[in-house]
Every structure is written in C-alpha cells, then in structure tokens.
Length: 565
View 1 (cartoon, helix red, strand yellow):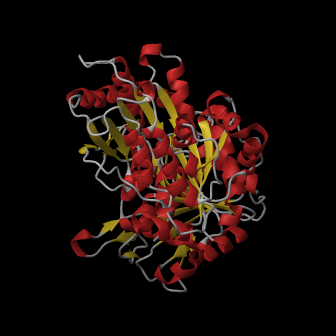
View 2 (cartoon, rainbow, N blue to C red):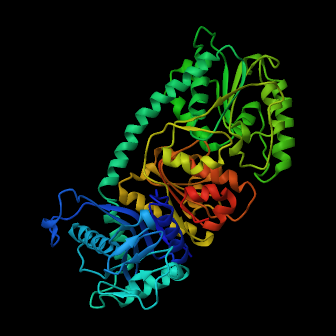
View 3 (tube, rainbow, N blue to C red):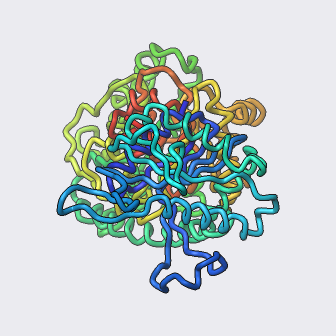
C-alpha cells in the first residue's frame, strides 16, 4: 500500500518536508496521490489580493493530498520547535533563531490558490469539490486541548500524530465542508493533469526531445573520433555503460572498416550481435547505405550459424545445444569456409551476451585467425542471460564513460547500477515517475501509464511498454500472429505503441518508456532492472512493487525513484 506521487523524486528544501512526505506516502492507500512542492502564481481575482505587495508573486504548497471519495487537503509543514506565544502569534525556533510564522494562513492561501487554479482551467467542467487545509509539525508536541479560532486541533498534526497521519487527514477531509461533493477518482486524476500541465506544458518536453536528438548526434560525432584515434589497433574491447553510444559506434566502425576509412584498405567485415531486435536494427540501418559501406554479414549469432551452414537448431531452452553442440558444429564449418567467405574483421555488439564457446567459430571465420580484427562492444552490467564468456585472445580495453542517450534524470535513476562512474551529457528532461503495483497487477497499471504518455502528447510510435517478467499479451499476440520478423518489423514500421521484453530490447530505445517490473525471479534481476531503466531516452515511468525494486536495486535506486527506504 503506497500512494502515487508527483513528481516521483521531489527535490526538498529541508529534510522535514521529505520525512513527512515519505511517512504519508507509505501510509496512504494506492488510490491517493501526493503532490510535493507545488508552486503557484497568485490569482489576481482573490479577495484581498489588491492589498498584497507586488512582490508576493508565488505560493508554494508543501504537500497536496488527493483522496478520492474523501477530499483534497493542502498541508503546510513546519519542522523544529513551533508554538503560539502569549499574544496568540505563531513562532518557530529557539533563542536567537526564534521568528514569527503564519503556517495556518500559508495553508489557507495555498488551498485557495490551488483550488482557483484548477477551477479556472477549461478542462475543469465540474462543480466545486471538497477542499480543506491543515498544518503538520512533526517535531513538536501539541496539547490535545489546543484550539485557535482559525485552527482547531483536528487541523494540527504533531509528532504524536505521525504514525496515523493518513488516517487523520482522511477524517479531516470527511468532516470538512460536508455541503460540497467529495472528489471522484476521475476528479483527482483531472486535478493532477491540470496542476502538472499534462496537456500543454509537457508538449514542450516532446519538442525538447527532438532538440535533444540533434545534440546527441553532435556528441556521438565526438565519440567517433575515438575510433579514428585507435584505427591502428586491430583487437579492442570497448566497454561502456548504458547510453554511452556503444551500438552507434559499433555500427559506424563496421561501416568504416568495410569502406576502408582513414587510409586503411577496405575489409570484409561481419557485424554480429545476439539479440534479434538489435540485428533487425542493424540490417535496417544499413539497407540504405551504399554497397561499399555495407558489411559482408549483418545479423544475430543464430543467423551467423546459418551463414556457416547450420540447418538444424535446438530449442531456446536447450543450453547444451546452444553452448556446446552448436558452437562445435559451427567451428567445424568455419574451418572449411573458402577464403572468399571468411572475414578480415568482426565487430560484435553486446559482447557480454556471448558464451565462451561462441568465440571459437568467430575466430576460425577470420582470414587471419591470429591477427584478424576483433572489436567487441560490451557492458558487463547488461549480462542478463545465465551464461558467461570472454574472447580467448588479448583485447586492448577502451572505456566510454559519457552517457549521451538518456536525459540526466533517467541516467541518474539507474546510475547506482552502473559498474563505472558515468558523466551524464544527455540534457534535462522530466522527472522519472514511479507507480507502485504488485506483480500480478503491474501490466494493467502499466497500460494506464501508457495512456498517460499518450495524453502528454507523445506519438504512439515513440512509446514502448517493456516488461521484465511475463510478456504483455499484445507482445505475445504479435509474435504468434506475425512471427519474429513481423514482430520486429513493427518496432520500426508500426505507428503504434511497441510492447517488448527487457531481454529482447538491449541496444534498442524509445523516447518514452513504461517499464513494467512484473517478475519475481531474483536471478539476473538486477541486470534486467538496469537494462529496463535505460531504454528510455526522454521520458520514463516505472511500474512495480516498491519492496521488490528496493531489494533488487538497493536503497540508492529506491531513493532515485522516490520509493521510501
């Protein structure tokens, strides 16, 4: 049980507000929504506004709580020592730090400003619903018989009230302004959309995503200079975290080697990976290139086996076939390849997916097995399959430590999972949003999150829903009806939301992603989480069980996602 939050990972002016937010989110049911640090420009139509100074430009609502079938509560939070002096004035602090405050007026002003902001919006074509306000003093003890004309005891929540803060707010909302209707769940959703400008300002995010693409292209060109600086090194392992541009560089290097760039002779090159989706991307990207820029072979390891002459394959779950029988047969066939069908160099993307035994047929397919080119792009933290392997030859390591692809917010969310320190250069974007859901309900909740993205203005073809456990029914249906080739074609050609699994999406991306964490298997769970969090370039919504995510990703990831630890 935990409330939804906006934003998912707020910035806090002080630890007191954060502590109250965490306590409330943990206590509240998942039907509630808690909005933090809401800043509002004052309405010129409020009574008494003309008497206020021109410098009073904004109001900040510490916490706004939306409770379907109960009401809306605006909270003002004050930490430290809070008391009322003998003249009836609110004071905060001790000794020289003591100063006057007016928390009740702040809460009331915030309530009126937020309510009027919502009701002025053209999307709010509804009657006024129940709004109220309260103050929270989490460090102070307030007498049970406390009362002031503008603030009865039930509007004050002190240190002793914290264990049941959500219950007290529910009671307050239930008994306040009873002549007004309670907000429905739809009313609360509409208030969230209005206060966060989903249908208007967030369209600017979509435009910003397009602008970021141009910046990423420039940064990627900078990365490509690395290839030129290392052009005389025939065997390398290029290591980099998610978003570092490995796949783009692998593709560029395969093209450069093929056409003979930088005074090097043209080579016969194979561009190889494990994922069918990634292989499909390589094939499509190269289909429009001039013939002299297209590698001699482009495809998955399975397709490479067919190139060598393998005709019969075992089932996907037959580890003995894939890691022993198949590579042995491939090695035999590679040794028999005519010179014209062998290669001068292999470029392997997502090399951490390859088993030890797979490298032997690759090396035997080189014209010069001892000195032929081998360029392996890898990220050990994306080793999501239960097999381990490294090339049995010496490779010069090269590290890519700049994240170019993801916004800083997304890169920050998965940064605790990266094996190295990465420098985020992808620009700013919207906060990562977390929606709590049990594994059994996660897909349904994720579907709702997709609707949120579409409402924000994202085009369907820029949106993906990626699961970590059981496949989404739409994915299963497309794969059954269209086969693997047709399914992956929809990733590129379709104008609809893409539904995929984290195991098949390595090396691929979408501008806006809903990551549905619906697995309960701890094996390689951390790696699946890492891959999933890094598939979105601009907008990320994470759906899953808070306890499971905290257990898999640790407290650091939980904090990044706004999950109480």
